[in-house]
Length: 384
Image 1 (cartoon, rainbow, N blue to C red):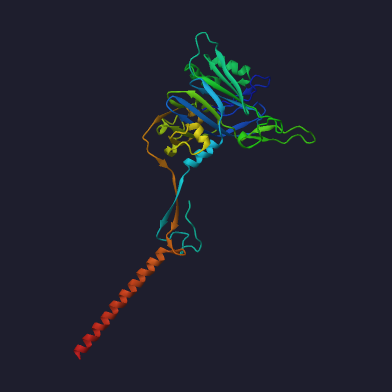
Image 2: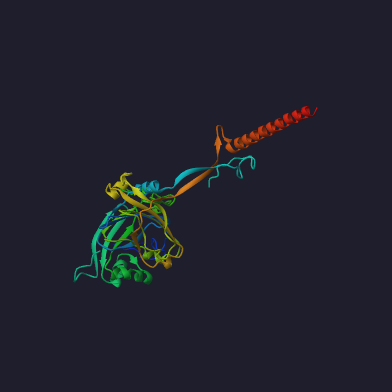
């Protein structure tokens, strides 16, 4: 989805950033950054769409940026990192124990050891080619919201403000310009560690300090790494769409984790060039299981669908994810732990069963033998 990262400083004089076709974040030309995973929670009520997005990144960049197309005027706020913890807990697999009767490898007598067997709307006539409809500072982010009626004008504005777009990236923006979408351009610029008002050097800020120069009092420059602070983007939409087209510029495989919260079970219409989306969870939730979740759902019950998708060849991505309602069949992954059936102090049931059968058989044989002996004696007596 997004992801045209460019290292820049919006509105300041710095070396321009280059869009590395990684389909992810772009640092300035002297550093590197990559996105290992894109995790998003999407809430849609039929009229308004909210996307809470988090990137897991690596590299040594102190600055980076990305641009995200949206179909309508967007509001941007900081997201709550705890939201993803709550969603992970809700959609995690169910663990069950399965018992088997006969011993397997690892069970006595096959082995002496034991094992449990685990396995936007259009601009008004006469509007400028590029318009800045909003700009704000949100924690470690400098956010600009843009409109554009011409791909070259959009590219030129971004370049003027620190973004230097490749021809490929400019071409990928063309479909969005033609559809009169708007854009959220975000600069990630952490403050130096130790400064007043610093956003922090680890944890939810997703920034880590780098060693300073020996013998100086210079504060270490924070770098972007780990889980970045989530952003929450809200816009009007009568269709559930998740922008992915820009990820086709990536040169390395991409991974997407998508949580969809809607009135019905929602799944992508097609794979848009990646592997088949895998459903990890589908089911109704109360929407109040966690404070961060309540803020997203408004405290209303919703149907939650958790999807995973891999893009081994990002260049094959041919559009944005459009999601549709499907049969509301609940699903939850079940992971079984196989254990040998035992009773009491761990005595295998098969041993008791076999022992009982052997004892019963022995008793039957003994009774038969006894009866035969009695009959034989009686026959001998009669003969005498």
